Length: 272
Image 1 (cartoon, rainbow, N blue to C red):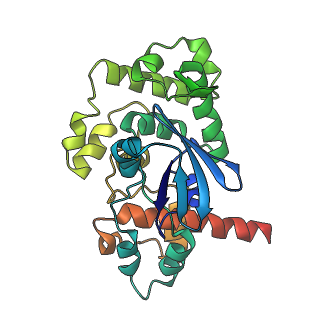
Image 2: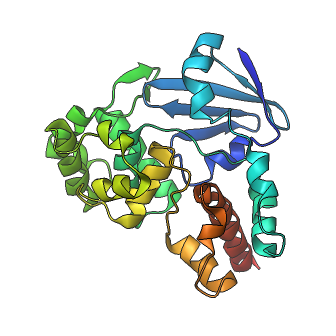
């Protein structure tokens, strides 16, 4: 058991931030997370304080980097423009979200699946995909499928995963990875712009999905995915033009604050 503490880490906000779909709130104080081949149980000890059910070696080799623990998120907050009242409030509301360092292939397949789906629907499809094609880690918990498992999956198993038209996209993309048409490791050496362009070669991947993969799979924290929620925020609060250059180098962190807070504001409007 490892104790992890940061005033800029909130597991509930991370779980609902739209960047991860295999993190579950089990009880009021307990979360379960499956990342690739890893399974982690997290217990809330207090505000910003958590117990990770792993040993020191596993934490140092995997989870420390996964949760981006060596990055000072308070520095991002301090750099937000003082006259940007929306973003100031968004940061306060979303404080505790960190950009997770997730597996590029898992993010590529996951965000292809995410198109035109709600967060609960994405979770369902991803979980089914893991159950049908992933390796069992323990007690009915499954790892994310390998590229080979998806590339060579029979149509029946895939059709059980509620993928719809995305089924063809994810299988073709997995085949591209297996055949070496796209090397997810080597493209990680490219610039942000070049990385996004390479990712767009994959079946079913446009600019938004490519930027999501760059941000959450390659930890390119300057990537700025624009989905319907972000576009609504930009249109409503910034007259259609967000000053992204103001946050050069960490625009992806700002995007997460805007996304998380923007969705909350919209939900509150609907409930009134």
